[in-house]
Length: 282
Image (cartoon, rainbow, N blue to C red; front, side, top):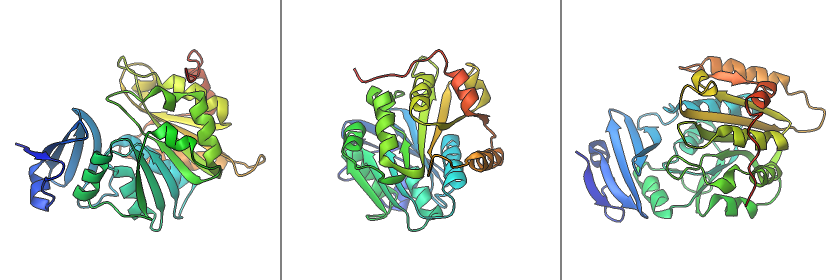
């Protein structure tokens, strides 16, 4: 059974983590369940992150595998300057720290107590390799200068929902501005089950970016299953850039994943989202 801990006094040795933890972090109930080498983090009962304690590059969540395939296809073989909107246990930044040595990543996380606990428990890298900034993602993004990052990942949830400002046309316009040319926006949506409709996000992305695809398990696209939808949006290096080879490489890489998802081209994505208008700030 997991032990109860306050965020200020929980044990951080390997034995304690192995036995599991439950504690409060800034009003969020955090539970960490360890099964052999895999530590899964639940926030207010929602599965949020999963870290392989022996090899953090082995990503458990399928959407993180798909997102990593996208950076390998579009921004291969080099350190990244990445912005992660939403952090939780920082499973994805931790994996990229090892997969792309020398990368400098910034995580924006609203719950500073949660970030402090996760950094301590999972021995996350320190600045300049991984900066964790406490703040609201939309406000932080608005303050950032143009052409700042190679990659932006939006992975923010309150329960099962992404806050509305992070799903709007204005958000995607600002993300486009903050991206460097020849670089990538990656959006994790949860679709269906009475929650958010990823097609609203997709319509907004399509209104801003010319190069877009969507990745998900096939039954999610057909409405038969609730789950993650990944939107990949590319900001070309120049107007005449031929990006077909990059899309082909992405399709090749996702076919090699343990569970092969379905790939929707820009045309297929637009058709899927045709009845869902972009959201705007109220």
